[in-house]
Length: 291
Image (cartoon, rainbow, N blue to C red):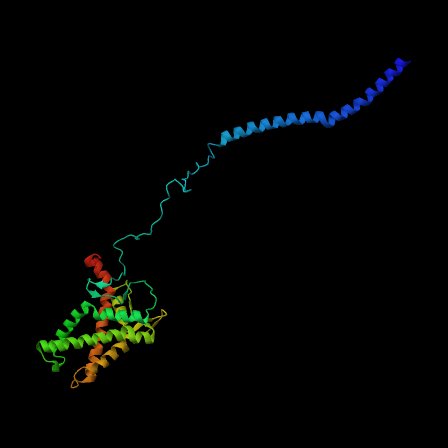
């Protein structure tokens, strides 16, 4: 009886333990084993596939080698060639470039190179411009030539001839030009707020540029960059001619002589404007840019 009871008890315990073990195996041990094995298999397959892909794609999609750098952090590879504007270093490109002197002698301080914009001159700058034009050594040479022409034509009979007569012609011409320079380049421009400099065209046909140079006697720039009637030239030269009546002989016709001096000064400025306009072309064609 005791043996039968012991066998039944053992059977019931075994029956109770078997389902729990089965449930535990379903929830823990067995799935864990399956997951580990499948994970291992997947990892292995992934490694193999990635290795194959990398071996197959590397030759086709190979990236450029990394750029080596120096200690300062700059690249050691050569720089790409930079584009240089055409003619940037061309020594023959002298389009519209105005020198300070024509032929290294004649002062050219009033001329402005083509396509150049400059700030307005101060009154001090205008005075210095007139002083440069009046007391330059070449101006003394120009006055010597004008005095000789006037004496040869006996424009002022009261001056006489010979050395004494030439001296009178000389200093009268010098003072005429000096006063005209200061009136047209400094005194009148500061009142009218005009720019006394000559802005060259620099390009175009002979007739067009000559006409431009001559019309600058009547048209000039304002300090604000606009265009206006050239009071500095016309009024300044007229005023200088009128002042000349105070030191010319009284017996000469003051009205005639005033207009003659006025016309002479304006005409000379027109000739010099034309010379300044074409000088860069002449310099290149004849002197190869030397002057």
